Length: 253
Image (tube, rainbow, N blue to C red; front, top):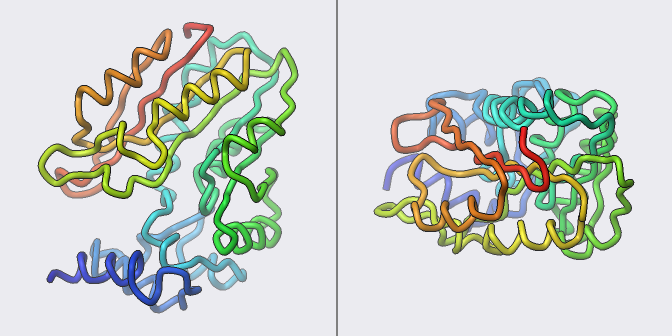
């Protein structure tokens, strides 16, 4: 078993999954798995800096979070079409917030936007809520699942909804075929449908994808949008890179 596989299994499924990590554990995970002790950089800070300020993460969050370098790229791609959106107000929503780092980067790109994240796991919610308070980040986190959260979310008619969609992948990522968007938990298409039903106005979605994404599952999601564009970011070794599918509904950039 490689150090990469060992560390991921220990943090995701083992005794450290729901345990707050010490700084040395976070840095060792980054160093052993990716050759970079600062791999788990969050909120614009390397681990030593955010840990010093009191920010804490669980083992599962260290593995599952969208780290700074990726979150910044995703936020950039998602906000590019907004230059032609003809909207003065934006409502940014992360239905599966986790560390809320992507939400943080989206808000950095959209000063003044209203932003809300949903997180149903009590342990992840509590730590992320504390981290947001410590860093005084300008968005709200609610402890709820995404269908209930969307039902409770009041949006004005002039707001453009911007949703970042990255549910747990679970068994959706296969070493042979890549990521199957129909097997995420829940399936991506079902999440998009729920958002479209809950919010009748203009929508922009950013969906986290993988370097190898099952073509049929990608098409199933793309057909729900009026316009879409996929990007993959060369940040890791070949075959291990993430990307984003950006799609719009009820408007075209």
